[in-house]
Length: 261
Image 1 (tube, rainbow, N blue to C red):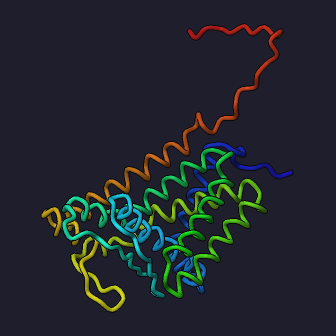
Image 2 (tube, helix red, strand yellow; image 1 turned 90 degrees about the vertical axis):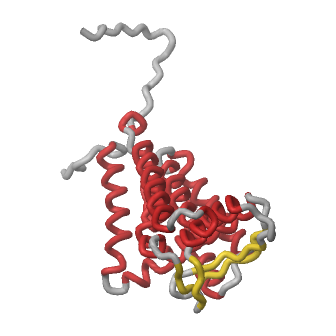
Image 3 (cartoon, rainbow, N blue to C red; image 1 turned 90 degrees about the horizontal axis):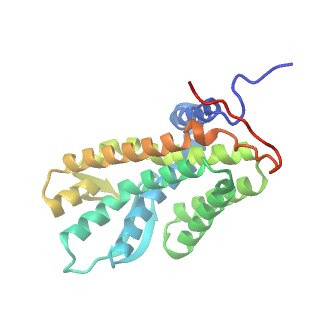
């Protein structure tokens, strides 16, 4: 009889699953047809990013109008912003995009530490995707791909076993957290061509609003995203959190403990 190398539910198993998720995210584009397999999830990270811009605009009292995703994975969130809006508001809206995937990724990794949240989180993500497609997404690629991702999440939440449901959360969390590496060049670029138009990058817009060079803001965003991801991983992989709950004994059972020497 073969025995598992690591104990089910142990810290080793959790680390292994997260490492597998990282390997899948990194290795898929390099494999034959890997780009096609990772494509829906590339569109999903663009959705994280652009929804970050749009929802930040809403939080700052502005009007998020529509989200456009292009076939190459780039995208634009269009918002009506008041002419007299403060520089801080402009900077916050610009920063909301690159920070959103890390926030979502960290949240998914945190949720993977609690079994009761696995399926509910997957369903909540699917509902958010479907709602955004109805309300905001206005591009053929977004309308075609995002509902398929949402449907896949519903199927996983409904039919998959616990291990696969947890791995799916961890995979999506790592995907979101690592998207900042995919955007590394973009963050350190002052201008970019998106949809055939040359516009200020996110960090270029922050520079225009808050004066410091765009590369300073890029470094700050990457550092903050790294710390956020590191905290979520530390929490999710805490050995105490992975231990099974202590069994409650009946009230009529006496316990005698030997004090530590």
